[in-house]
Length: 208
Image 1 (cartoon, rainbow, N blue to C red):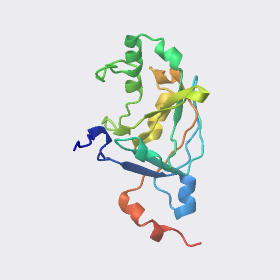
Image 2 (cartoon, rainbow, N blue to C red):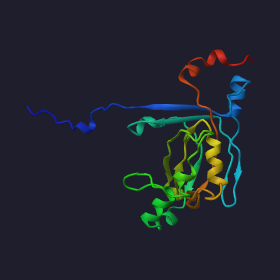
Image 3 (cartoon, helix red, strand yellow):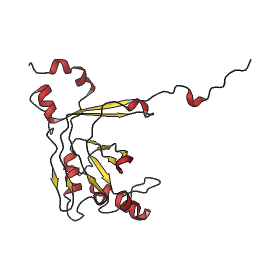
Image 4 (cartoon, helix red, strand yellow):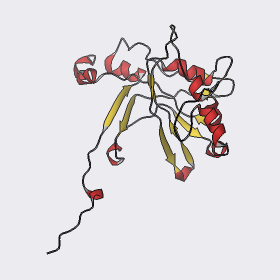
């Protein structure tokens, strides 16, 4: 009797599923009352000489990632969504794109280019130590509307300093040149509590 052949592609595969939960300033006030976590407040609108970071409301962030796409269809929210000027960016030679970013396109090696995205977005503390930041940008697209871009998501102790450098600029390099090829249409700030905090939420809610 012939045995059916099952391809490995259809067998269940392990799923590395993770979720980061963040809480906005106004949602924090409604859920937990005072005091808010340090530095948690509504996202400040930034108006630079050429570019503008808008402020949009947001209560909860669910940043979901997995080794497969299908488990990720769950509530999520935007921190900053940037619409790319795809045509203008693609018209640049690769070498010019690398100078804007501050890194090689194929090997992702950092380049020492003053005024590049990497250079402008590097934040130093009072002692000259580089401040840590986790970037977790994700592409998005709505082909029917001709809309494509990036969900710019960054985790840091002090994200405002980086955003001010990006949009307002600092002498002598000015604003982040990557903004010349994109337009920010949302901007929200969240506090990401620890897993232990999330487990104790029922006990922390203020009385009604």
